[in-house]
Each structure stands twice: as C-alpha cells, then as structure tokens.
Amino acid sequence: MGYGLAGIFAIAALTFGIRLWHYRQQINYLLSQMELLEQEDTNYRLSSYCRVGKTEQLICELNRIIQLDRDRMTALKKGNRSYRESIISISHDIRTPLTSAKGYIQMLLKEKKPDTEKQRTYMENIEQRLDDVTDMLTLLFEYARIEADEIVFDSERINLCNLMADVLSVFYEDFTGRGCEPVITISEAPCYIYADRHGVKRILENLIKNALVHGTGDYRFSLEKRENAVEIAVSNRTDSVEEADMERIFDRFYTTDQSRTRKTTGLGLAIVKRFTEKMGGRVSAELQEGIFTIRLTFSEY
Image (cartoon, helix red, strand yellow):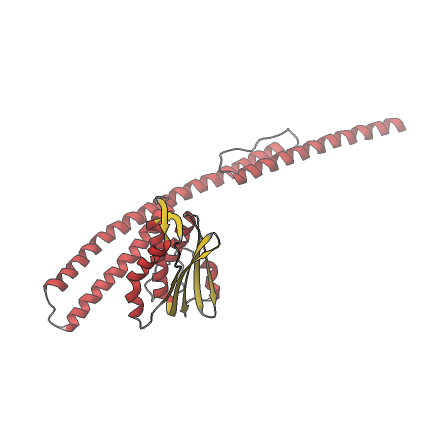
C-alpha cells in the first residue's frame, strides 16, 4: 500500500514537473516574441510553443489587443498625414494673397507719396505686419514639410565661417537699431562641415530671430573649433526664459511667451533641432544667471 501511494505521488510529481516545464517554456517563448514586437515595426502575431492549460486563450487575447493597438496606430498615422497635408495646403493658400498684398503696399509707397507722415507710418506698419505673418506661415509650412519627411538635404562641404558671417551681416542693423552691437567671434581658420547650405542658413536665421524676439541685450555669436568638431554658440540676456522652460525649449509650438505678445509660433527652435539632427549635428540649450545660450555642434569635415 505504501509503495502504491509513493508511486502515485511520484507520478503526480512527475506530471506536475513536466507541466510546469511546459509553462516555463511557453512563457519564455512569449517573452522572446514580445521583445521582437517591441523592437521592430512588424505585423508579426504571437504563436504558441506548446499547448498547455489556457495559454492558447491567453495568446488569442494578446493578439486581439495587439491588433487593436496596430489599428489605432495606423489610424493615427493616417490622421497625422492628413493634418500635415492640410497645414501645407493652408499655409500655401494664405501666403499667396499675403505676397500680393505686400506687393500693392510697396507700389503705393514707391509711386504715391502719402499725404501725411501718419499715413506713411500706417502703410509701413501694414507692410511690417504682412512680413510678420508671412514669416510665421513660412515656419509653419517648413515644419509641416519636416514632419511629412519631404525635405531632402543636399549635403556639401561648407565653410561655416563664411556662411555665418554672411547671415549675421543681414541682421546686423536689427541689432544696431536697438542701440546695441552684438559681439561676434568667428574662427580665423576655416571651419568646414558637410551639410546642406540652405538647411544651415535656415538654422542660423532661426537662432538670430529667436535672439531678437526673446533677447534683451548682451547678444553674442561665436564659431569655434573644438577638437574634431565645430561649435556654434548663440547667447543673449533674456527676461522671458526660465529654468522650467528648458526641458521643452525645442518642442514644437512651445513658447515661453504665454501672453503671446511676441511675434512667435514656437516653431523656430523646433526646426533648429530637427534640421541640426537631420544633418548629423547636436543641439543643446542652457540658462545661467539670465543668459540663454544655444550650442550647435557639427563634425569637422
């Protein structure tokens, strides 16, 4: 009798051990498949290693949830694509009449002298407002194209010293008009990088415009060699950027001016980040004692 019970217990223990081993194998197999799904964008479905207990039902339920998530992501991507296409279309449609309106204003200023100085001021203000709206739409249009992955960079060997000097010269009067002269430090030795000329120019323009909009003085622009890299630094004193803003400073549509009194869309620095990284560079920002600084680093070529 004792041997009979011992045999039954032995068989039960063996059966339980085999079943437990199958459960472990099934779980390990599922975990490996889940890791694959996490790492790759694939339509792969979970499968069973062995039939044990209710694991088949579990796998079916997991596959159902995974498919629902895939369907939601597909719908989201489709919606985002439609949104980007709408933004591009709307931006283009608005820019066309704005360009036309600016042309008429310029003709009036050129061909017909306003009767009073006040009228001239009004017309010049209208022209400036049209320029502001056009700039905002340009940023919106450009970012929508970035999101749609429509911008293709044509990289070449660029002397960054010359390009930066050219771009800064265009904005020089904007700084002197404020009664301040920017401190510009550009390496005497050529600094070559491999990048898209238009893309780098847009980055520099956005950085300068951001400094003009949010800066209150002490404008500094530098370009220096750092070992095998080239570093651009743009800094200015500011009263609108706080430490709490730093984590989101490169986020799209984020602006430190919550009152929206400044002419900004919150896209300028987002474009700087996307363009810089797309061309293999790095970007960072810091705030120290009221001085806001953005640094860009590109590999020297």
